[in-house]
Length: 350
Length: 265
Ligand SMILES: Cc1cc2nc3c(=O)[nH]c(=O)nc-3n(C[C@H](O)[C@H](O)[C@H](O)COP(=O)(O)OP(=O)(O)OC[C@H]3O[C@@H](n4cnc5c(N)ncnc54)[C@H](O)[C@@H]3O)c2cc1C
Image (tube, each protein chain N blue to C red):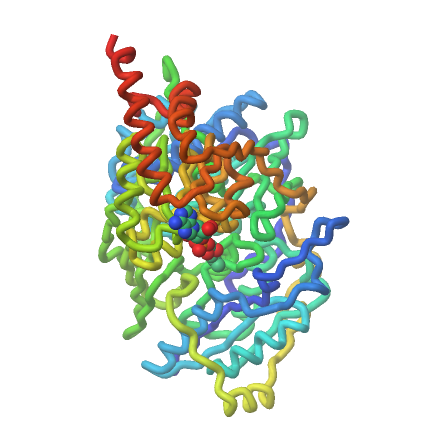
């Protein structure tokens, strides 16, 4: 069978050390999930006294390498070439696999974004590693240095803990929006190793013809999200949602059917097939609380539901429940908040 | 030479009616109906549209137990030309690595291929890792998360839906393409084709036929193992009832507890 590598020999775990994370970029800028990987990677590396290596590829990455160090990265392994300024599967997977084979990391984390998943499994096959997809909890066992990779399964009802005992590195892709972005470190002292590389022509046959940016609303970074669902009954209902959102410094979210109706653009959608958010406050107005929506917002610190149905599923996920028509409750809430702000404002101005 | 297209499909438990056994914490397979993974139907449709346009041989392949036959026949009835099920007791319990290996080995056993299609992910495992794994084993390029796919003169052009926008790429064949769920409307099976499909039937290939050693595949060839399953415990929330008259108190509480802040960063 030409070209196919067969059996996967087990590795010698003791030869593998340190934690790798892949820093995804868009136009040579780190994307938020890259920072999330630094956070979780650092926590795991620190727990076993190892180093965090950040892999950064691109056309011009010097500034972002410094960024990575400022967030706590110990060593940036960079590859720079004009041919790497946009992500392409083959050059990225080749260069990264070479880094892995050379440095032998014990653990390698990649964001479970679309390009992250495009990449992860190729590296796993090329390096004969085990990979667990879309993890929402990651930890390391101190004595064995085995990665505990946990991923939701069966429609998010169960969490499966997956281990990779004999193969190295232990790879995982980590769901975006789950792991916190770390604080910047006080006196960063990471080392930056960037090489200019020449990419083999045979790896560059894919042409990226165009990238049409969505004027994406980034809900994942929002501190306050106010979402509307089918209970709004009409597109106009989102005006009310916007009013409340702007009163409390929030951004607008939606359920999938509300976006399907064209009441609001798709980039506001929260849930399994939308964005995963974890704001300080999430307001769910006219939202029933089906699992696909819950998945995207259940880690919010505080949740307020506004729903006419006293038995709606959303209620058991809520800290506060306003069992009322949203067309009555939201204007009243906006008023109460204005009143409260008036009371607090003089105090805040002192 | 006629274009050779392979479509990777999987039979999955119907996600609408998944039943978990409370003792083993695993899927109760006897109570769960099996269906064709939806995104794979979109992958097959993408292949059939290329067949309609320029002519092609479309072969569907799957790794799975014998009951996946219903899925294979369904694919033939929609318009595929050949169906091969890689099925063997040694294949059971595979993680994404030996699954990719088994499918890649099956494809290379078939011989020539120009385009391999797969769904973006399966609804039961949701890894999206098998397609790219197959491409790596076969050492070919890939296009993942495609919302539209076109073929012309040895090149596949596709739109990829990414978090920040849509990327258009063009790749010479051979290439593996994973297709987004709901990115097209799969054609119906006709009665005529259904009868032909049943008559034609599927081929079943075991490890020996494919040329794989038992220890390379299935649970033995899997680098990862499931240590345990546990129900996801949601944080208990108070669900404190507030009526419209009490919204003033709620507003005060939100600021007092710093759930809302006057100056949002
Ligand atoms: C594969 C797949 C992926 C999916 N992905 C997502 C996803 O990412 N995000 C997502 O949100 N959904 C997703 N869904 C859809 C999901 O299953 C639900 O259909 C959806 O979340 C329900 O939206 P809703 O709550 O807006 O509507 P409904 O379920 O119709 O609920 C409307 C709610 O509004 C309440 N209501 C009605 N009138 C009023 C009023 N005047 N005042 C107050 N309350 C009122 C009702 O009591 C009801 O609870 C997905 C589904 C599938 C199959």
